[in-house]
Image (cartoon, rainbow, N blue to C red; front, side):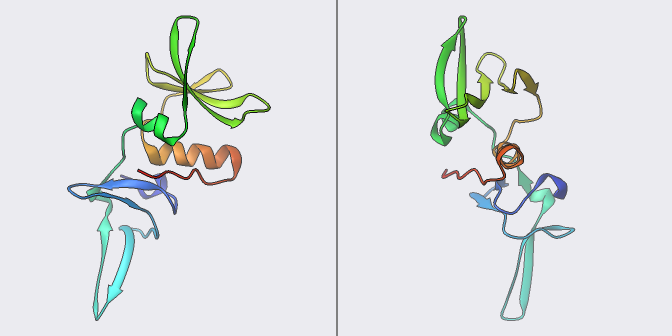
Length: 126
């Protein structure tokens, strides 16, 4: 994983361990710590994204709909205005304003997109 993909608050997977929340980012890793003369951090090579699945998206707050014979998951940013993210279950692509956003495959990418669109954090409890 590359450092420029991450923001404080992103939820990611540490290979062989439970998911973790990014607290700090350095040039070589995340979540640097120091205690009793010892220090460490989680290296970028140990990190991977948490894949978006239908079940996870529903847990995050997406709603399942059928439109024109296709199954969609919708996450409303502004329900009053009908502004939202739409995920086609058929091809697992996320759309915003009818434009596909191909690079959204992981939880941290969805968090970053949501922040870019709203200026607010997307709270996720795994």
